[in-house]
Image 1: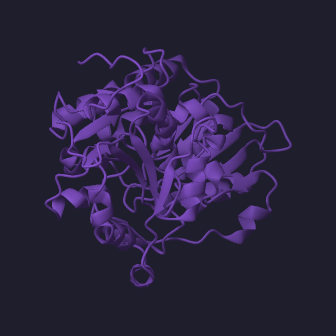
Image 2: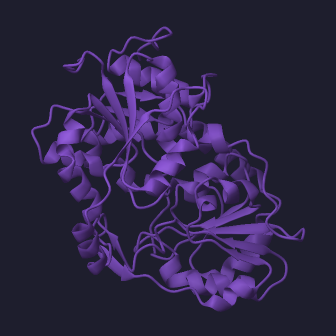
Length: 402
């Protein structure tokens, strides 16, 4: 299975081809680990913006030679058309893949945190590069188990839950994946909580998704902000998925639905007990999931990062989902599910302290979603799996199969 490399040195690229930074922490920790594991390989970083490049550099080991960085910045015309269309179609990402096909063909493998890269398999006769996928999150939404995943040559996974669902849907095979844990936790999981407010009230994190069908923001968002503005028992951090306010028109390919984004009334920012963050680095580095006392959301995979330490969680069913027994909503078993915001006050009172039933459910779900039995750091496990898959000479013994 070893790719043909005319130079004799295999080239492995880590590709970051997105408008925002929320995917970086999922694979960037693997870069230095792979450099150590397979020092004879050429490990390179390909980014679509300087912001992406700067974000990646945070995760690199300064004791190692820096990897080569390559830029695939968007074409100005494509970016303009994408903006004219409301950014509902990732033309920039697709155009970057197409325009740089010759560059990608020079790599033996690309490691990626999203599925747009399968465009290279769909629209080319590319035996090169091999595509290696690590999903950016460990959530339950059906989009996380889409058919595009079957186009990857190798898949790295955070835990047994994702593996079992991918096997059941046929998007991976028993011989083309490896459970490696969750590299993002290495950098952010154990950081002490940041004090966000100058009071001792419990802090609620409201973290709606951007999907125009599944997100609670479009139907309930203003009611939620109103509730917290008009009470003095809780602090509120409003930190939605970073994509919610990056596009004028939100599109769900999965559900074939379009919605215009709603503006945030500026009056909410004037309250001392409300903090609004629509896309800073703190939205993606676990600052808020580490610091909050209570989670309020809908379908974001950030709930799984939040329950690393079991805490109260409340969910908003804004789209009349028949969620019970549905694996796409498994996380809604972690706390009460509300069909409308007026039940929020009673729900907040009912989840503190965290009922034992929810604590046990969260602990079981976390253990099923993230493998932590192996004492080696996830980045090292991922690096070893990549080296084994590509048959790279390794510093240490390869991982056992199975």
